Amino acid sequence: MPISQRDKKHIWHPLTQHNNTPDALGITKAKGTLLFDESGKIYIDAISSWYTAVYGHCHPILIEAAYHQMRQLDQVVFAGFTHEPAVKLTEKIIPLLPYGQNRVFFSENGSTAVDIALKIAIQYFHNKGDKRKVFVAFEEGFHGDTFGAMSVSGLSVYNGAFEDFFIEVKRIPVPTEENIDQVLQHLKNILDKGDVAAFIYEPLVQGAAGMKMHEAKNLCQILRLCKQYDVLKIADEVMTGFGKTNTLFASEQVTISPDIICLSKALTAGMLPMALTTCTEKIFSAFLSEDNAKGFFHGHTYTANPIACSVASAAIDLYQSKIIENGKLKIEKSHDNFLKVLMHDKRVMNERTNGVILAFELNTPIDRYGKKRNEIFQFFMEKGVFIRPLGNTIYLTPPFITSEKQMEKVYETTLECIEKFGEKNE
Ligand SMILES: *Cc1c(COP(=O)(O)O)cnc(C)c1O
Image (cartoon, rainbow, N blue to C red; front, side, top):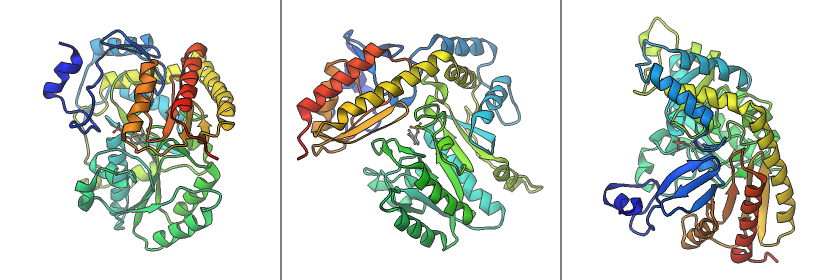
């Protein structure tokens, strides 16, 4: 029996209404930019499997790093023990992070990285005798699906069952040239109450919102205001981190540095689940005390798994290699050219790019998980290109190693999709 049929007996898929969803596609193999399904059909992974496999799937250097570490030390408790892969990873990543980051807390996914950041922010103030329980977040932000992360996410469309249990969050609109003064005034009114612990934001690009982009200088004004009120700034770089934008981390393009950063997804380049929550020494020192209770009593069984740490270190080396650097530059350049094509197309709106991310809206009303959205998804899949449209938003985040020919095919398919589904915006 095909995998897709055996799947149906026991598996509960994420983000899925099982009553009306087509069978899941059985994937048997991945190599570089390509995914292979069980019927032998090949797809270009034009979103790097949710922005993880940015150096291509099954990269031999990452396989080697995992295999080498597996034979040396697979797993050990990280409370009271330490190991070379974890130490090495922190030594590699700290100098690369935006100004001031100095401590690293490990977990396994983006949502836990965010939950840890929120808990650190609350306890930071608690330890100083200051009770702050409110978070500020952007409308349409996405930070994950665990309770804390879900609470700060503005995109909680299907989370109605949990709303009574959310932590307290005040939302501000994403800043634009037009609304920045109102946003700042609105934020000031919120901060004046004195109970805000932290502001959490996806710097420059809001991934799940549909790759919505905002200007660094406007974000900077918001961060400056937070700083004035001694409110912690949490940069959720789970999506933007590791070169998705023009820089290694999007926060590098913003002059005010965050106090806490969340990383995951491309950290291990799609090979293993792992996440980091980093912070400044100022935050960390608020947890040092004669009083044990002021320590951060949070931990996961697989915290700093040695194999994941080794793969993450190898992935950082890869990012710094010439091949990857050139590949990334090539995609950024070809995106710029494709943007010029889209600019003249009346069936397309808000075409935009930053780094390897390119996105636009089709000028036609489509529900986020609606029927037409599925038709567009199927259209691309039939042509051998894997993307995940978000409503009428089409976005690309191809692996940095995607060849020119493969990029051409992705762009061509995109134009065909516009031809088939777009309506003229007169
Ligand atoms: C994907 C994502 C998360 C959640 O990460 P998971 O590993 O899926 O839990 C959090 N924040 C942002 C910005 C993301 O893109």
